[in-house]
Length: 275
Image 1 (spheres, rainbow, N blue to C red):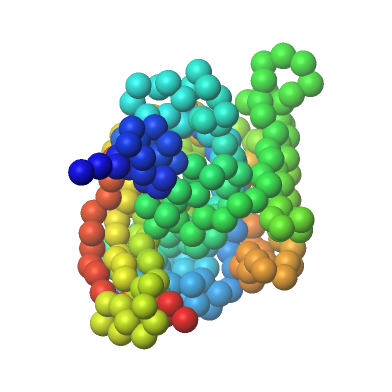
Image 2 (image 1 turned 90 degrees about the horizontal axis):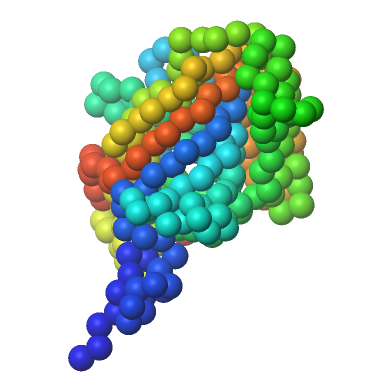
């Protein structure tokens, strides 16, 4: 009998075509984070049971731009950069589950297919987008990491601009913000192939609430600053519903992360429907 291999589709005789390798996955990245407050009701509407809004500052949102290089443990993708480099922008809120505070990614856009595949596995709601951010550099006109440095960032999807920001750094900080500072509470959902079936009548073949986070983390000096942030309406996107009511702060930080799996919190309890 013939067997097929690979961590993810497509599975083949050798496994070499798999869209993503098996974990652990290693990341190096530049993060530009803008935190602000929105209407807490707009956060609540994005939290399916059994998740509840955070007890403190329930309307806090982090909009993060990230310029990544990622690889499997051997690091071979770094020498074939098209397989390692990608960008993403994502919106994070906070929530609670059984008395513990979690972060949760509610919207995210990436510019490579392998990043979307990893998101399906991790419970991130990834979609394709166009993401750009200013890169620091010690020479020439690019900004240095210093007080007064200015960074721009843009996000678009399906030919529509969804967000743009300009961040001006003030000085070193103790943290990179608080909204995206907890383990992630995500759902892994997959609709059943048969209509009207699925786990406990939800129409879902896969219905898991999971906890996910970094297996290890390294981070450079965080910098804090101020941001000018604009969100825009689009026919098939709802980021603008998380309207900016009050700025909190903006941050820049370089990080290194290893992701190596998560933990099942519960299954089959979602109120989501495949319909």
